[in-house]
Length: 150
Ligand code: ZN
Image 1 (cartoon, rainbow, N blue to C red):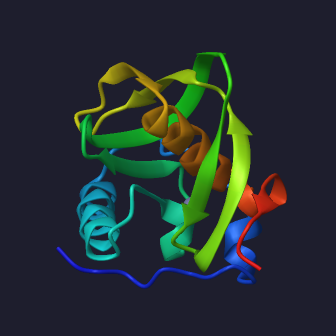
Image 2: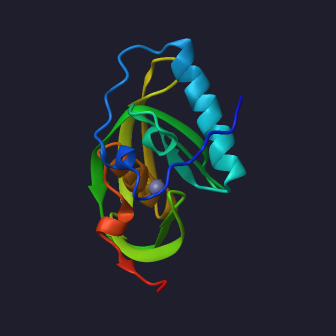
């Protein structure tokens, strides 16, 4: 396991669309492990592979209430409601903004065993699903947020 360098806003890698994972290889498992280490060391709620320079559709999320999620090729399959709340990003250090996100989100993804799994989250977890999945398409929350830090 290793801690990886987190790319910062301005790096073009963060604006690229990531490719799906077609096979779970030892390399993908190591990437997941390293991303978890990196997210925890940075005290983050989520991390997407492009943030560590890997253009693959891989996300990790960990919340105090729901625990750890490892998402490979995740897709939002349902959402409802709305929430307006504060959001930040490990690639945009020291900045905060207010975003509008769905209140409830269901994602379908592959886990590290290659099984299809569905997860439904509300509030913080719903927001994290949206935020991290946006990273896989080169989108950052600052594109849609009303910044509150300047
Ligand atoms: Zn982010």
